[in-house]
Image (cartoon, rainbow, N blue to C red; front, side, top):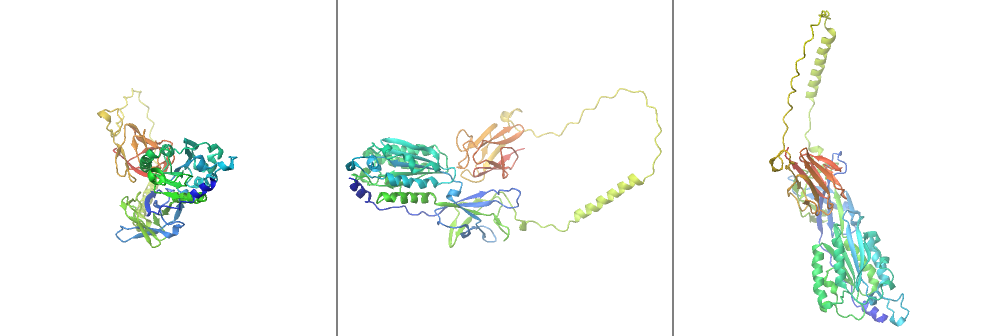
Amino acid sequence: MAAALAAALAVFAIATPSASAQELRAEVIPKSDPAKDIPSDIEITIVGGPSGVTADKFDLVQNDDKRGPIDIKASALKTYVEGPDEIAIVVLVEAHELWIGNDTWQEDPSNAYKGTFQKLVEAIDPLSHAGPPGSKGALLTYSQGVQTRLALSDLSQLTGDKLGTQKELAGKFTRDLVAGLTEAQAVLNKIGTSRKALVVIGDGMDTNNETAGAQIQDLKKKFQNDRVDVYAIYVSSEGISQGIQDDPNGFKKLTSNTQQLNGVDGLPPAISKVVDAINDRYYVRFPGADIKLKKSFTWDGKGHTFTVKFDKDEWDVPDEILMTPKWVPPWKRPKGGFPWLWVILGVLGAGILAVVGIKVLGGKKEAPMPVIEAPPPVAAPAPAAAPAGPMKTVMIGIGGDDGGFPVVGWIVPMNGPNQFQTFKLLGGATKIGTNAPAHIIINDGFMSTEHCQIIASPAGFVLKDGGSTNGTYVNDRKVDTHELVDNDVILMGKTSFKFKSIN
């Protein structure tokens, strides 16, 4: 029977998805040192680009300048694992005894099956290094129900030894694939990382073939809606000639990213291909200006169009890049002439000092005033009332009374999915984040659920960070608490906001 299993494992050839076209995303990165007289950087995320490249191969070109294209070379390139986009990976493995094997503990050679276990343990390990720091991983098995082998933990803990021993997986002769996929979807739905992936390894079969096909297709839609990248590695099990609804590979109903192996030895290379697919992106950093060459992009607070050049290829950045904050390069600033004003003021100042000196030191001494006897004391008049100070602007309160909070503040995202949408601030505290209970909800994977709050009072508006993961910045400075003024620029995650108020 072991020989029959080996023959069954050798039936299928490798089938991998074709490479997709490049996908580009742009982001303005605030300068790290606000004191430096330089503009922000621009970072382009390239998905599906050529592999093994270096920064010197890339140029960023602004296309809409009146004087012609502005071309600046890249200054740095980060691989995916060096970048900020954390990922959550769930690995779902079939644990049917005939598929996993039992040769390490079965004493009767006629009932021993080598299965996939040994190569499977070895193959899973590379996934523990597939994401940047802060990424998460979990390991589930499905057979008779679903078993959690590794609860959601740091991705470095996602290793093959978490499967346990072959004997610990023994005694299960069902394939509850739908239950496993349902549990995997629930685990991934709990995590807020910017990327999510599911890796399924098995024979693509479910114990209930009649209903599983439709259920798997429904789950496929859920994974797509949750933006989960699904990868399936198919190894046939003994005695199964057809899959779900005459599909020899039920995984094809789940995803187009399938690999069909011709033997268990193909498991490590197959998972390496999954790791390569996860690492299909890198981040290219461009300075906002080349000071030495006196070239600068147009930092005028408006949107501009750009193209990325790689060798002889050109890829358009799909959306305009909002060039903020404003910055004018030194070679375009007005040049001052000779400082005649300061010379004149200096001469006048010297003359005034000379006159004062003559009056104080050169005048005749006058005779002292005669001493006159003081008259009898009289009652002092009552002091005059102090003059009233300047009138202060009174802010409009809720409901029109003087005791309400100001209702004249709002924030406007300057980039991202909520760009230019106006969010009015509440009286009291307005929470800002990515999900309830935040009052203002922003679609930004780098923001926290309750990122910060802005508190309105008769004295004005105060921003307080809510212990966010990536911090809150006002005018390029990281803050915990900050009194806001009109036109302050607030950075939360990767979204810049303009604060507006009426004084």
